[in-house]
Image (cartoon, rainbow, N blue to C red; front, side, top):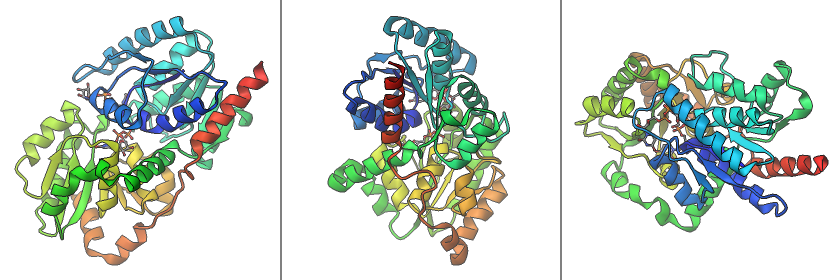
Length: 372
Ligand code: UD1
Ligand code: UDP
């Protein structure tokens, strides 16, 4: 049983589900918590994944306690009914953590996709750093995207024969969607109006949603965007997360900026299009830190630490925090200094080769055969 609930988990798990379903001797059930609703449904719809179970638990402005309580009860009940032989979770969300915990309470083995990411700071990202450590303590199969993440697990005394370096399934997802858009460009055609409106300007693609940035962090980010967008040679395209803690601040501070297009969350084909037309990505997202380097886009990360150091080490990502002046000066440097820009704008793939899901499905299948 594959368990997930948010947009990024759906993006990173649909290739795994497809690969598992190709193993005809395994039956794969999909349980969505719907920790996200609209943003999850966008991914389900484009990828054709139909959940077997949908808990529909999202509530506006949900607290971590209430969310976790609803997840514990809801996922536990499905596990009791379906009795899967194995549970598969991805990453570090509340749904992933509770999926692993409820499986553990029933002594069902757990596979962890995107295992071993560590920032070594339990408050950044919060609460994801602790969520993934809890999952790591429970899982018996750890699918690490890179040697760095595998090394983090073995350093925590996870037995090496339970850690598999597979690549990150987000690269599989990106390949899949890029291929689909190549065959059917209309799938990503709705940005055309904005592309015409901003023709000749350098596009800055923006996303932000981290809980630890709510409040002062969000205000500082909005204020930086306002200063950046005052330049005539720049336009910002900003699909705004549906979280009210993000939207209220952005609407208040950026609502009237002519060079800022604040739009609804994009479905995955349109977001892939935004990545491809952007000159720079400005983000606090995990997934965008992995996708942008694969497409050769410099990515400025509005965080102080990252559990994805591979892009920073390679020089295509830079940690810049949320201070307004720092964000503005880093963006201006990339806009005005061609050498600085070229140094960051290099396509490379530290996060995988697009075949991670296949590897994961084979490992799960082989392990299940050894047991019987
Ligand atoms: C969650 C994950 C975070 C992940 C992020 C991806 C946890 C603890 N956090 O963030 O790791 O990076 O998702 O985006 O699991 N909302 C909607 N519709 C949607 C989605 C969200 O209206 O489709 C609004 C709701 O008001 C909801 C709020 O956004 O209550 C926050 O959603 P939530 O999943 O709790 O967000 P985070 O915990 O910030
Ligand atoms: N994404 C998307 N539409 C958007 C913004 C992001 O499809 O409007 C995708 C993006 O390509 C990436 C994922 O969502 O794969 C990242 O999700 P998010 O930033 O919400 O979560 P995180 O990766 O930080 O956990």
